[in-house]
Length: 517
Ligand code: NAI
Ligand code: SF4
Image (cartoon, rainbow, N blue to C red; front, side, top):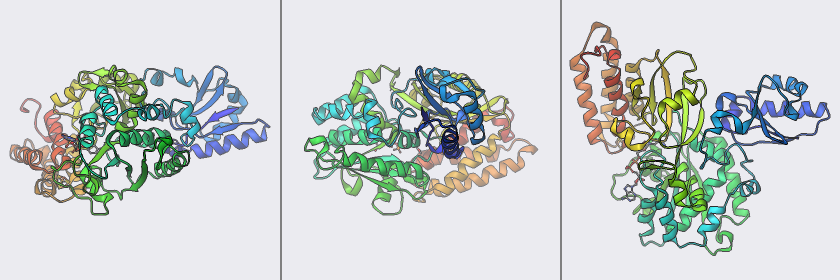
């Protein structure tokens, strides 16, 4: 009997190792032969640890399973897929999963992340094999055709970025994967790295072939020890099997991959600070131009892409750009791995084509708030993203639709708040976050964030006494300066959460709805 128990950090934090041990010992004491496979997470976090049993009709799901449930599960015959209070039937038929469009996450939760054989058996390395028979120009053209835009948050067209690097003459070029996933409420990069690491390795190898780069770096945030262990192991296995190295699959083309670990600074997710950090320097932002595509790592032309952008490349090369761009809307093509977190009943990973609305995500997938209270606000796109009120929940997830509201989709993280949230305190927190994480290079961010935090603290103390137009005006003017004069997105986008909180929830700032703009 084959039983799957996730090894993903989410499941581990909820006791998956204890459950695995309990299943192994209970099966042994009952004389039942079981094969335990440690898979990735299916992304249904409220059901973790989600244990799956292979039956003739498919994988049957049980969760959330605690070690103390295991004896009862065996008593009920779960090892034969029989009914139990924790049972959910066939995993693939669970609505949350069934209604998704998993392209980038096609294998996540299904395979053993460490197994190269399993990866290949589930369509892995088909994209690379096709790319090896193509010219660099044709690979770049396929990625351009797909409409893929940077999934780290800025949504810059990946094909154009690659074309810039391909067009540069240099004896050395680099592929850098930005795996410094620092946005609050995001975990899709982590899931790919822990749960389907070969797809990232394959995507980076294809990027190397496309632009003529023989060396790649994955810059991983230090907070992801499980991802680090999985990546080190799978890079070694891919190298041993000839998928990485001096002669990728006998093609005569080289691609080497190295892992570099960050040290906990949010700003090292900004691409130029990240390059400084890989070079061994303090992570401060470099002015642009020059663009990293032209003068990047060690001064050489460099493709820097987010984990999800690179992990989306293998399926694009395998099935074609036209297949990928058939999903989505407007100029937001393909799918987005959406991360639903915060005060939500069913948090997790939802990969869907662009165009799904916030309301569908929050209620049809998320099942409303975890507290049972009305949802008052959601923050989309990390700590630098805007807060959206209920009146904007029908907005489709589309880069342009969000921009029209003064909001961002960013890396696809959605953090949910119920009606007990204090939006003035959230605005104050945005300024505090900026002050703590600022690299200090430019004045609007370094000084502005500290002044902003002070101002918001004063507003919070005095708001019960009535409107404070002077302080609010000063705060708006400070936000204008940060927005227009900061060197990078940290200082430049901190006004998004602050101003959206003031505009949509003025009552929390001592301003009545009527007198608000
Ligand atoms: P950006 O708009 O300056 O650049 C986007 C990318 O396109 C960069 O890689 C840039 O080098 C490249 N690029 C621009 N013009 C190019 C050209 N002509 N040829 C080739 N490449 C070109 O945005 P930035 O500052 O890199 O990123 C800001 C975004 O990062 C924000 O929108 C935010 O959503 C996101 N973000 C994501 C975080 C995460 O954890 N994933 C954390 C913080 C922010
Ligand atoms: Fe550094 Fe902030 Fe300026 Fe960015 S905006 S360069 S983080 S000081």
